[in-house]
Image (cartoon, rainbow, N blue to C red; front, side, top):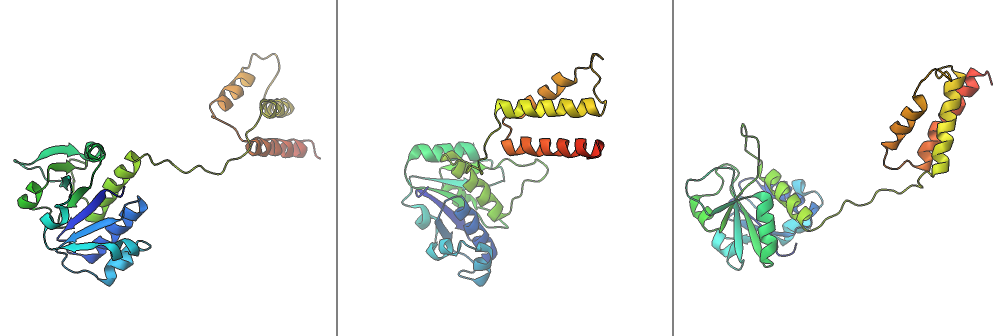
Length: 236
C-alpha cells in the first residue's frame, strides 16, 4: 500500500481534495500528491477530510505532473473519456493487478474536476484506466473516482472483512428441541393434524436447513415465543 501514490492534477475545489484524502485513508492509502492545485491548503479541504487531515498535512505539492511521477516505475491515468490515441487501456481492476505486479512505486493520476486530464498528461502515463460505469452517465465526482480505485487496491491487497461478534452456535440437540416445540404448538393449535398426510415436519426442517448456522440464542428466542403462545392459548 505504501508504494501507491494518488496524484490529483490541477484540482479546482479544495473540498474534493479533502474528500479524496478521506477516501484514501479509509482504504489504507496515505501518499497524496497535488499538481498545481487551484487553492490549497484551504479550510474546505480539512472539513471534507474529516479524520484524514493527517493525509492532507503530508500531501506534497508539485508544479508539474512529471515532477509528481518521475520516480515511479509506472503511472496510470484515470479518465472516463475514450481517446482515439492513448496508452494501453485497462479497466480499474486490471490496472490494480498490474500495479501490484510491478512491486515498485506507482502512481494513479486523476485530472481536473471539469476538464479531466489533458492529452499531454495522459501520455505522460503508461496506462489509461477506465472505471466501468453506466453507458448513459459515466461521470464520477473526483473523490468518488478516488474511492472506487482505493477500494479496489484495498481488496486486491487481501483485505478481509472484520469478523462480527461471535455467538455460541446451536447444537443438534438445541435444534431438535425447537422442532419438538414447533410440533407441540402445531398440534395444540390444530394447525397440524396427525395422519392427514401433511409434510409439515419435513418442511420446517428444510426451512431451517437453509440457515448456514443457527445461534443458540436465536433458537431460544423462537422457543420462548412458542412457549408464550402456548401458555396464552392454554390460559396459563
